[in-house]
Length: 239
Image 1 (cartoon, helix red, strand yellow):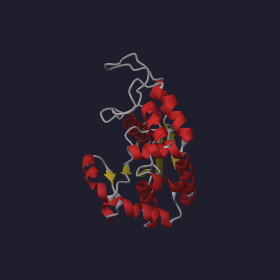
Image 2 (cartoon, one colour):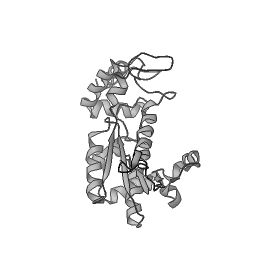
Image 3 (cartoon, one colour):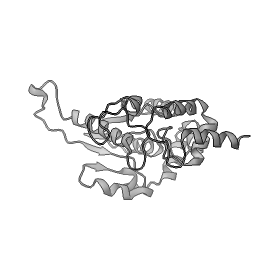
Image 4 (cartoon, one colour):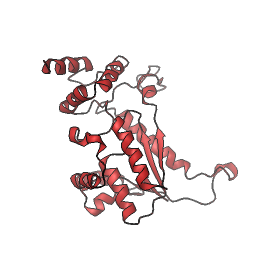
């Protein structure tokens, strides 16, 4: 069973469409939605869905707001406290959660509810396909023990080539890649200052939401800046 991990970014999009063009069979496409994607990303996923029908993009949603500010910790140093707050380089809980939800979905594929006890007597071999470009082939070395394939690495497709390929198919994310190098969660504190400035100037409704999120986080947005600090900085720059 061939399973494509689809984030909606340029690399996973190029990988999926190239696989289908090359006649590589795809059984399922799984997209883990953090619910903090750019609005243009959701429109992009809808466009890709139309391009690959009847194959269906299966969206698995994470309730980001719950994990961010409501989840009660049951272990660790902060047991009993609410929410994980903003992630940082040492605690990228949102990335870990995406992997967890993806793997849970994979695990469910090995079970057949029609069978006694839910366990299928026919084992399903799952092959994962991940969209890592040739530029970052070193990342493919981390999962040698798992049954994962990296078509873009095998084909020597770089990030630039993946983006150009997507553009050639009429996919442009409403210009997101002209503003950001990465188009994952818009509220990510690991974004560059320049990209946070673009978020402040071009997506004011999202910035307002970020200000509200800041009120619920026990952890500062960044080591060098709070959301309030950045708001003041960017506002002063615009005077």
